[in-house]
Length: 110
Image (cartoon, rainbow, N blue to C red; front, side, top):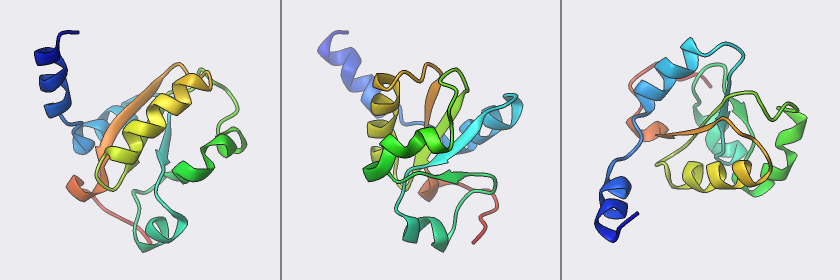
């Protein structure tokens, strides 16, 4: 990828609302919130599982099968981008960074 293409790729932020729609259409998918437990308790997307970025190596306790589609989010999209790379290196093959809950327009539960 050329420098200019990288820049435009970086600018193209994930759309969490679109990501949630994709998640809902994907059979067997897991919605992963990589924020801290405190952030998760303050409000999260229904059905999401909380595996904080700092404890991502524990994801196996939530998702054993590396073929299961994962839809990853955080607050702004930065930690989920980091988590996506880590998960791919751990062998998860269907990982999607859907961005940050800050831009989410749907229902949140506590």
